[in-house]
Length: 227
Image 1 (cartoon, one colour):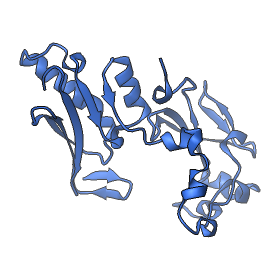
Image 2 (cartoon, one colour; image 1 turned 180 degrees about the vertical axis):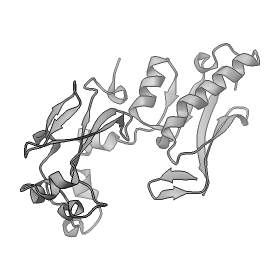
Image 3 (tube, helix red, strand yellow; image 1 turned 120 degrees about the horizontal axis):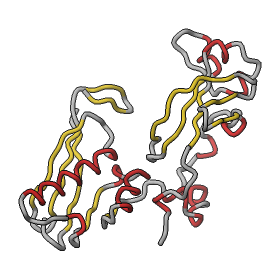
């Protein structure tokens, strides 16, 4: 990679990783390529099926390598353009790129849900027979739960304090607090059928109670930040 070149990051999944389809034997290979000179400048493997968390370590590895080889003290800012596919798109990565002044282009995988010009597109151009699609029954929304972000406490509409399951990033990279009702709480609750998509899930030992989550960052997301 030289000044003015472009580095493209791609992924190559191999079929022990935890994925949306369970745990499989394999790894996730991520490579960065200098597009101009057609040279691989970094390659790493990760034990996760998702790619978005690999962007920062890959870029930091490239930065350290080029500095160690005395090619560039700051290759990521030396007129270098970083491109990556939509698997690397989330709020955490966009914030990292913005805060470090890295010139990068990653397709926004949520732009259709934000662009008002596309509000009617699904109705006009969506798949046929959408009207016959089975939809989930509406349940009591998370907004009806009382959430205390200071003490990480949540009270359900029935007045029960449900269990705090921790804080972690959601699929968009936004810090989120997760809560879940205990089995006995939900199993004996009069609001169970209005509160859960699958009320019978609380009726057996290996089931689960109602789950809710709350975003902790109310600031403007980096993806739609301007200026």
